[in-house]
Length: 218
Image 1 (cartoon, rainbow, N blue to C red):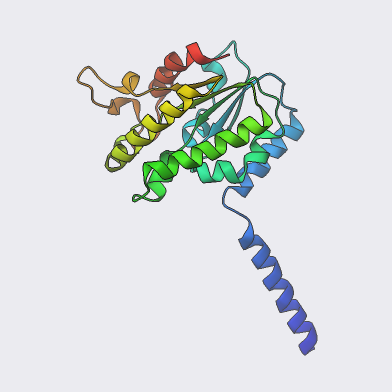
Image 2 (cartoon, rainbow, N blue to C red; image 1 turned 180 degrees about the vertical axis):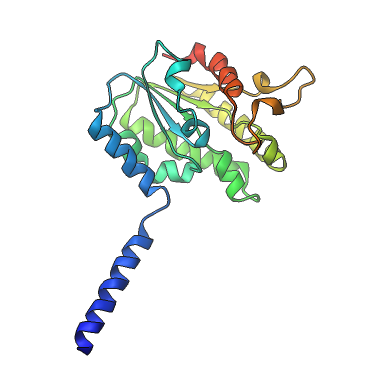
């Protein structure tokens, strides 16, 4: 009886431990896989990868009616998460373009994080993309200055500047700067385009992004 109890406890511990070992956002990735099984992803689409600004853009196809978009944003993700799940986010697809929005949560996760660290994370992701897709268009949307994260704006601005400089030197790559378009006549970030959390967008915010992004969409 004691052996059976020990074996049972060991099994419970193993199950609990294996569940604990699953990385953050593992379930989101499984959901993407399920979607791909149910609806095989089209070739030559525009692949969106990144955090909640993409996740919550559930009607993105309505904003770009002439484009085929695969949205693989998952809320709360950081560049570290995109790097961790890079194979899952890239391997199933044959896109003609990849657009990235990520980095904001890296700073929110660690307020002491240096811009250089985030840029390094982004360059790692960019290299992973280029290993698989050496010639397609790869674009990065600038980190937005969410009013709820104003304390982090200096680091974000520095990261944006460095990533913009990096992308300028890369072939088939663009830095899509949404900063000015999100400001009012006085140069302040428009709070009216955000929902109550002052982090995520109302439709008006996505309309602004659409206008800025349109010239870059393949």
